[in-house]
Length: 119
Image (cartoon, rainbow, N blue to C red; front, side, top):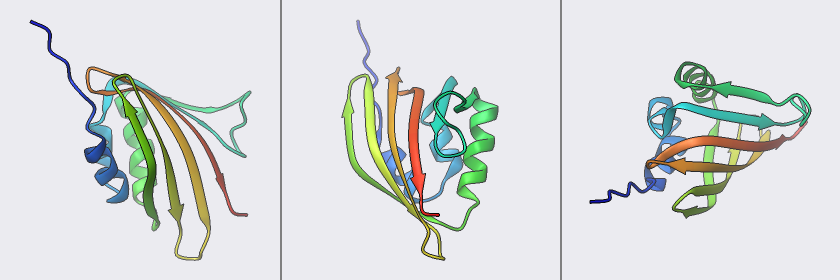
C-alpha cells in the first residue's frame, strides 16, 4: 500500500497571512533549509537557515513585526510550491517575496526566496 501526503497550501497561506510562526513552522520538515537572497544577502552570500530551531527563530522574528502579508498566485504540484508574498508595513514600506519550495512527505524540505523592498 502506498500513502501519498499532499502539501496543505491553505494551511501555509493562513499561517503566513495570520503571522502565525508556529503554523508556518509546522509546514517544514525538521531538517528543512530556507535560503534568502536580497539586497543584504546577495547570491554569493545568501542568508541560510537550516533545521527547526533556526527556522523557528527566523519565523518568530518575522511574525513579531507589525506588517501585513498576502499570498498571491500560489501554484502547487506534488513536489513543489511557488508563490508571491506581498508584505507592507504601517509606514507604507512594501516588500515583495518570490518563493519556491520543494515538498517531501507533505511538508517543505527546502525553500528559496528572493525579496525586494522599498527604500
